[in-house]
Amino acid sequence: MERVTVPGTRRSTAWVVPAIVLLLVVGITVYVGSVPLDSSETRSLAPEVIFTSLWQHVQLVVVSTVLTIAIGVPLGVLLTRSRTKGAGAVVLAAANAGQAIPSIGVLVLLAMIFGVGFWMAVIALVAYALLPVLRNTMVGIRQVDRALIDAGRGMGMSAREVLFTIELPLAVPVMLAGIRVALILNVGVATLAAFTNAGGLGSIISSGIALNRMPVLIVGSVLTICLALTVDWLAGIAERRLRPRGI
Amino acid sequence: MRKSMIAVGLLSVVLTSGCALGGNGPGQAPGAAKDGPLKDATVTVASKNFTEQLLLCEVAAQRLESQGASVERTCGMSGSSAVRAALTSGAVDMYWEYTGSGWLTHLQQKETITDPGTMYQKLSEADKKNGIVWLTPAPANNTYAVAVKTETAKKLGVSTLSDYAKLAKSDPASAAFCGASEFFGRDDGWPGLKKAYGIDLPQDKVAELAEGPIYNAIGTGNPCNFGEVFATDGRIASLGLTVLEDDKKFFPPYNLSLNVRTATLEKSPEVQTVMEPISKLLTTTELQKLNAEIDVDGKTPEEVAGAWLTANKLN
Image (cartoon, rainbow over all chains, first blue to last red; front, side, top):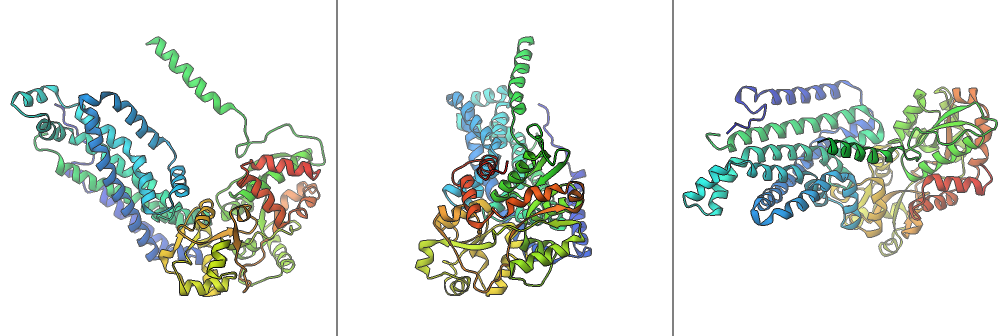
């Protein structure tokens, strides 16, 4: 069976991404320190503001990704069982719609109906990122060699044991690839949470846009990029750890 | 294989044909140019991206077109600073600006002026050297304001901004405030308001939303009872909101005035005479009515602008 490897996860190149992130952070710190800032810019780029926004953003990404995995993986497993063949198409269509519908529209709709805040933003983020996790779980399980499953059944394993000792471990590389995509998507889409009082780096970016101040816009955008790169790098490390031995 | 290729081809043609359907997108010039004093003029009209601005963008564009000009629209730009930058750089020729915004935000003046006449005088003088002409201002004063649901205002006993500052100290939970990015960033917005009235709200009682949802939030009291609104917005009346009185006169006058590049006026001086009759018709109540037709009745800015110009015999 071919080894499914994602670039950038091998030991030798694992330092590249953190180096780039460090460079970007140092770069914008130097930039902000050197450029004269007016009162609006100083307010928007105050260290407390940046750290609070960063922390809110991290919380949004972590909580929504955990929920996406908690919903997407079991759902994906369920849909690969022979009893639920038909439902797969319907659920995938719904996940597709969740990603296709503009998240800002979902956020404002939720704001009108239920109110604003952290959990509404998390709902919108989960809807957006569900598709890659769900689909990759389904594909990962389906691509497990039929012969191995038969061997397991032949050895007397129940369907549940086959799932947990054969199918899931072998599906992990593909599932993790989907989870990594979901994480990066969440970092990007979480910038919209600022429009419904969930904070995050998006509030720095939208200040920069509304007030047309380049330094603010650059800092918000670069920090979002750094967060996405860091999150992806950490996920890569997790992928290497969780990959079953011998695969 | 061949049949599925043909099917895919037909499907893409059907789906992309929707793109060819009409509609005024930004930067499109619809309709043939009429005859009139501006027959050979080509101008670009811009605006910010809230309802009143979109409406006035259409009003200006349709009025100029009715006099023969060829008009390109870039309505709905992302913020005051963006559209101002487009004007000073020459990317667009005109847009409707508010005197207070021009004085405090664009020209970064510190002097407080409360009289609309004086504001307009000093502002138009000062901006001449930037190559911008401020045409005769309209009576409408679209100032920033703090609004609250009328019943809530009565219940909390709040009718002025000074009352609100007292409420913020005594009962922060009831005094929760919602605002948009631009209001929180501008010196003539929340930061200045806080200082002028001594409003001291804990950070978790101040919520940042996009402009639209603020009205709904105040209407339902969740997450805030008070919020930043524009004085000429049609939703103030329709949602039963009251605007708190600015008793210390912190907010400057924000009268509408069409900003036109000096170069554009030199090339087509008729623009001034053509747009003149419109300014004096724009009062606060008139704008509230027109804005409500868009925000509450759901009409498009193009429709409302066209109907209004026709009713006033200006197109």
